[in-house]
Image 1 (spheres, rainbow, N blue to C red):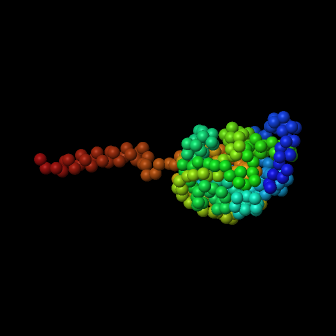
Image 2 (image 1 turned 30 degrees about the vertical axis):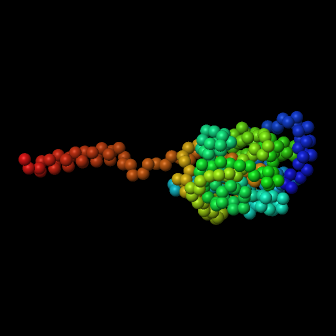
Image 3 (image 1 turned 90 degrees about the horizontal axis):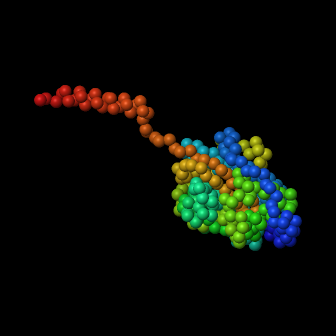
Amino acid sequence: MNKVNGKALLGKAIAGLGIVFMAAPSAHAGTLHNGWHYAIDSFTDGVTGGVIGADGAFEFYSLALREETEHIFVAINTNLLLSGYEDSTATNGSIAYGDLFFNFSSNDFKTASTKEELFAIRFSVVNDSGVNEVGVYSNVTAKNVSQYNVGFSNLEEYNTYVIPTGGIPTLGDLTSQDPYLEQTGEWTILNAIASGRKVGDINFVDNTTLTSLGLDFNYFNAVGSQTIGFKFAKDLLPSGNFIAHILAECANDGIALKGELQVKEAKNVPEPSSVGASILFGLAMLAFNRKKIPH
């Protein structure tokens, strides 16, 4: 199991903390560097068996996004292989990435899911997503898969597990106790697509290309063993403010990024001066043609 002696440790944590969490560092909006927006997670909150932090397979370091004219690029830096973490007790024999969600609504994540307001990207072919293909989805609802992947039932349990070890649980641009995500209840961590409508494909991007585009996790010392990158057409998502986040299938770590996609500029719309010139030209031609009409 990934939570070795979890029940015992959780009991000690509750007794020692009185169910009062230590304060996590305050989150900040995504940081811009070299044209990429970064959310940087704590380096000491990934849970892998008895290991908490950078030596474990489930440590998440950073989520980064780059917006260009036609495409959006996404890069994720962690210790988790794209093929997942082998575990014979998990549903598919491995514990992989959950799906990447985008919420452009003003609602919390659960409410947005219930109203089918979410967008999401499935990029792991081995995860327990409710859709069959990798790609971009709209009208998304979310579900919990941590119960099938030796994971945490809720975020309060995750926080209480990490803190006694000296770890500092965060979710990048969100605190780990942020009410945007449901904190308590049984299997309330929604980390995979339940349903949705596919609206487009993704294309994986290698590290050489990502580096040429200015990606630099080293700048933040956020350097795990794995960097996963992909791109998709920009017009598959709406414009406006959003929260994007991803959790491992076991919810042993996760990361969120707050950002904004710019409204596209209208195409083929002439400048005001050009509009005025066109009107004057049209009136002049009309007057000229009227003179040529015989009476």
